Image 1 (cartoon, helix red, strand yellow):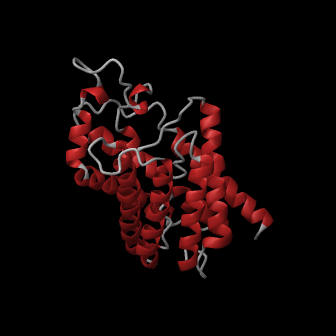
Image 2 (cartoon, helix red, strand yellow):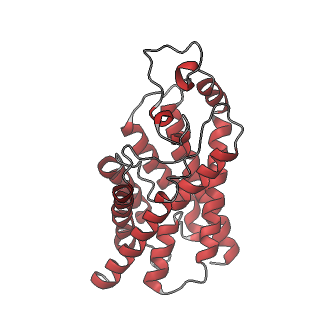
Length: 264
């Protein structure tokens, strides 16, 4: 794979991943959406199908890493680091593009949600109505959860541990079951296995932090949230932003070490 193929494939694949994954979060969160309050099951399966679609689309070009933690783990496994910056650059750019496309697709819903006084508060808001959970989090705005993750309970070591554990499960599944014959990306069957693992992680481990398990998935959309002209959008919670970046990278490195010791 050439560097240009890798960059283009990762950009396209990660954009699709965030468009569909962030899209299901928007569908469930935003007040004027037909899927409003569809719940956690809809989100977890939505992200699983997003992974499946993104991998099948981008695998022929780049091997469909779509996740800096996966790229790091494969580099540790193979000892080949030359394309890591290219993968990471494509993943971050793609995540930002995907987040911007979610905003375009739900433009009217974002405006309706963020100008509703029962959501953002202000004069005329009903005292009996409770604002969105995201709005109550220190430093986070009422739609940040559409773009990025956040903890239900802010305990830094636990939040990091949750992301590390979830990413270890994901990356071990990729390294042991998901890779193509060349071992440099996901194969056809591996795409399905990985998508189901993502659903499993979301159902079992996603509750505490929203299971980023992917630094680009969280950081790229968080940057877009900070830049978009959304009314009453609130903060982007930069005080927490390091957790879903550092945690998955640690988890990916640990998973690669486990693989090299136990499976290689």
